Picture 1 (cartoon, rainbow, N blue to C red):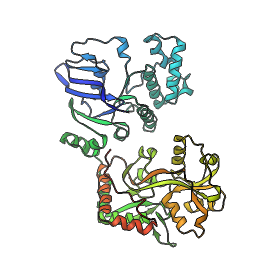
Picture 2: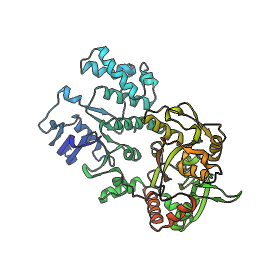
Picture 3: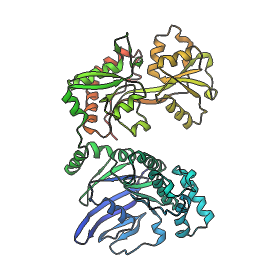
Picture 4: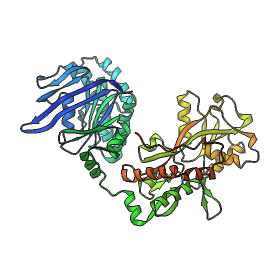
Length: 501
């Protein structure tokens, strides 16, 4: 957790020249204990130089750098003792592994040479670090036997083994093939969850938004703006930041193509009543359908509903086969790595429906078969909920549709049916023997339905958010809600909120 009262790095009035070229101009910056700060900006703006100054690899001509209130780098500081240098770990663009050494030897080398540890003590530290980056099974491999992503993770483990107070990353994925980037980014995300203080220079804006507490925009050696990730990317205050973001998001927005074609393609799943289902062989109806029509109406374009299955939702957004997806799409961490989500339009809870006589303590669900719908997040979210509460997990069985999953529970092929409560209620409201069934009273995992769109398209995301807010504020949303959801009061009705983070 970030401690805003405790800056671990303080950069005061730092300037840096190479000959007569000034690469950093009066930089003032604080990085707090437990914070992740991402630094973005155009090439040649001084990002990498700033990291090297923090690490003491570059001297400065003006100002000072303090680590934990101790002077670390200043115009009067010619060098740093070895002990203080170990307080800061740095991972470069290139992996810099010794090719003639195994993974374990690469990770233990600095521990033995710099910290003067015995081989046994170094191994005690190195092996858990390899486990942390998911590479303990590669400990006896050589760098040439590893992928680029694996080599970079070894480099991360090598820095972590020195037990630094701060980790610096200089474009850690720039030398990697695209398919290997995520494994390194996921490792860094996990470090942030563990509370490691980090400063990361990156061009991966989706990653920066995902991992950083703040983003600093650096241009021509100056910090132009520093703020929360969403504000820097989508609501920058400074003109230079706005120009940079406009250049980064240089490709035309989906909104441009929607307006040009006069049509919006919205993906929906038609086997999840009351969100979307077939009223007859030809007519598709439901809450999602009405919401899609409301969006198209406000854009003043024709609506093309594209029927997709659960598995295709993310794929169709990523490949631009659809402009948006309203298919009971829960905002989850794993999906957030791939696409962007609108403000939430519905608060829901994933529950387990059972025959009343089968309900007992939650511990009795251990290993029991629970039905859910294939390619939904239901099983993962409930399993995560159980894990956090140290409850033993049930065994989830996938069915092709919500109706089939419900009927499997009803016919006692499984002990329970797990889904979004608002979907389960549709079946219960049409169930002649409703009194036979009951939700397990201990299971409720909250989730939020959002519109899914392609990542880093700020113009389109902002348009969707504004449209949703208008639908809600106009009272149209409430009419659609009560048309499809037979509930008392406003249990599920979630007022839209502007995206704050």
